Length: 121
Image (tube, rainbow, N blue to C red; front, side):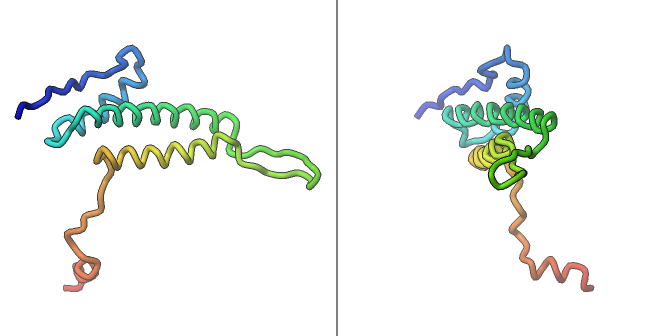
């Protein structure tokens, strides 16, 4: 069985913002034994999501998280659509990070009981 060579070069080097995220994430996944070409597609999607996150954050900083409108029920405070989009993007970033093994995992080698007794001596 022959091993398939995988290129970890940035697919969009001309896009500096994308390349920044690519280099940051590819460093964490390129040395894994179980890496596949399909993981690089997921990594590309994660980088795009990070760019979308940046854009939404800028919009929210400029315009705020809420807006006010006046209707038949009087003045109402509503979330801007960008906030809803940001929440969706954050969830997708977590999902793709989890798929690629880029999230911090709680150490499960100790139980809560052991943690409580750690300082009882």
